[in-house]
Image (cartoon, rainbow over all chains, first blue to last red; front, side, top):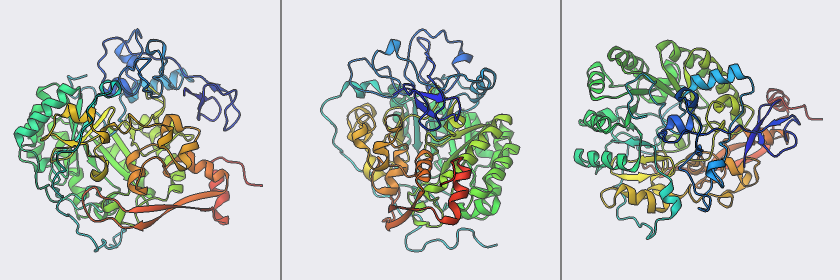
Length: 127
Length: 430
């Protein structure tokens, strides 16, 4: 299921909806985001918003959660069904380019679980 | 000063001795493609269950070390296996991780293999000497647990002076150059002072703040006055979302924990910056690995031992347990058919799959239906009803155990529903 975001109430709604089921507003489809080939799959990349900082050229698609899943595996996860190379990562579009872009630059990797990762200047050499 | 939690329940021991690890657990004969495709990138490792605090909400009932905790060499071997399996980052926890004499050796081993190493701590004994040793070993960040302002924190931690000790730990970390964050549980007795707590933590210089709801496991399940009612997420989530914006302005990253959610009007605020734009389903056994101090392996460190340990590294390789044990496979096998109750027919069922499996399992005895959900509480409010919890069966009193609660659905009280609907920006009932 691909989720977009309602431009009025900001709730997530199926991209296929003609209108937001919660408020009747317009649902903006998710943008396609890809991770550059060879990018190490760390929490920073899979869960966060450091793609722009990494200067990715968006050459190959990766699911947000989990390893690339072949089209015939039968396994599924959000945003990872079907043909990996053409599959968009789901995600909120940049509605307010300035604010959202700034937020995405600032927030960095997000915790799936556990303590937040160290800040970028904490001597990490594993990303 | 009156303890906001009241007297500690006396029916169970504070720090029971854990049972020996379950050994020789069965593994599937075959590895499926889906088991090979998922690899853990993040491990949370309880390196000892020994603890110098007595938190009233401790899910693991920490205090005494487990009877068969891994040796140093076994720990090193496990680190090597995690590296081989693809782990990129390890958070050390306890109990209290620094109570192991070899804790910095473990840090050093992790760092020598190029993995990120952080720690979560109550901070009580994190003195300057320990911080210096941690820095020298390569520890990259520490998350200090803070449960409210001083009186509330000390009451929840079970030790007077623990708040001041925790703040002092932050000072020591700063002095040696280790960045620090904080983590806070939100519950009935501290919700009113969470904003003030966050303000204090920002002033102390945290780089991030993880917030989650107190979950009904271990001692927390014994404390009837602590747990939020499910309908109270209607207050908790907007508050956390508002603090997210405060944090953005103060350059402090807010990390919503896995049981903070789901898909309500504030999901975009809380997780809009994620690559997915919102939370997905539980990553236990897919991207996350949990390890107990005796070598027991789970998909997530929080999950109860009884139901979710898939194997022990003294018996099998980490790779074999990861790929072939049923408890590690459960989210790989999750589908809409594994959901029940409200979650089965929820609009977000496919994406969410009932949110945090830990939170629901230790409340209801099985995962797949999640009362602590903002979307759910909002939809029920539209119908004029709300959910609260009531304990049916007490916990037995072992580490990582849980009581059984039931969820009671009831009409919103007449005197409260109008305000609740207004706050949730719902139209008034006719």
